[in-house]
Amino acid sequence: KSPFRRCISLTCSCPVLLCFRAWYTNGDYLVLLVTLVIILPLSLLRNLGYLGYTSGLSLLCMVFFLIVVIIKKFQIPCPLPVDVSALNETLSTVLNTTLSHLNTTAVDYSEDACTPKYFVFNSQTVYAVPILSFAFVCHPAILPMYEELKDRSRRKMQGVANVSFLAMFIMYLLAALFGYLTFNVNVEPELLHTYSKIYKADVVLLIVRLAVLTAVTLTVPVVLFPIRTSVNHLLCASKEFSWIRHTIITVVLLAGTNALVIFVPTIRDIFGFIGASAAAMLIFILPSAFYIKLVKKESMKSVQKIGATAFLLCGFVVMIGSMSLIMLDWIHNASSSPDAHGNGH
Image 1: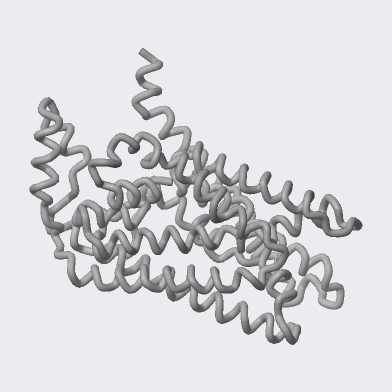
Image 2: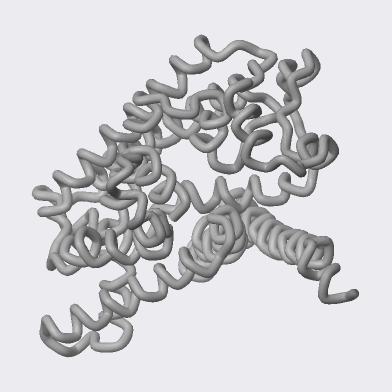
């Protein structure tokens, strides 16, 4: 919701519209508006065939985002330049701000901040594995993808999955690599927000923001399709298709999604928790358990069964360890927040 608010704030700076900023710069209202106008109509479609065009558009938007991230790496110097105009504006509007308060939100401009580090261990490292697991979970889309193939075969389905995985891996890797090399220790959880510290009103970055928002918005109906299909088969497997049931399931799923977006502070918490629980189950635990249970012709001493068992144990370690550390991080952040200290006094 914060990218929506930033884009609207930058594009709608006309003085005539200033009186309406109370609502159109509110991220919660924008999320609900986009859901009702764009996401809900696309999500109500019966099959994925019509969503191929929107998926292609979202992919092009992400390619544009990647190109800009790579180009900005060679345009932004390191150490990062101090934005004097932004600093003066802050000082003029908040006269009583102390220097100690300014330093808590300042960017590190030292030469040491320009040296990339191969490994960084801090309180945010625990989110790395769950987020990576969440990023590569495509299992729920396999069956709908197979149904949409013209000449259905296991080989063709595997080929589509391999190409999709490779393309996404390259895009994730390049975006993360060049984003980190641009800002190093100053990179934030939301990469595009980090650029706003350097460019306050850059047209290209504004277009990139809109492109990423378009990509995310158009991806929701595609992700929602297998979830709705699973719920429908689970609750009403023997019944014929019903538009009423189809609409109710869609609205309930979107309502739950909007509730998470509105009430959860950061998207990192959602990705981290779901990646540590559901993604770990789908990637590590369930495939290994199904292989061990269903493949009877191989003994438990075979290389395949031993590998599956090791993969299963690795999945439990990832799930339990990541969830425990994430919850500890939540507890630590809650206890160290200003509100918690204020209530204690």
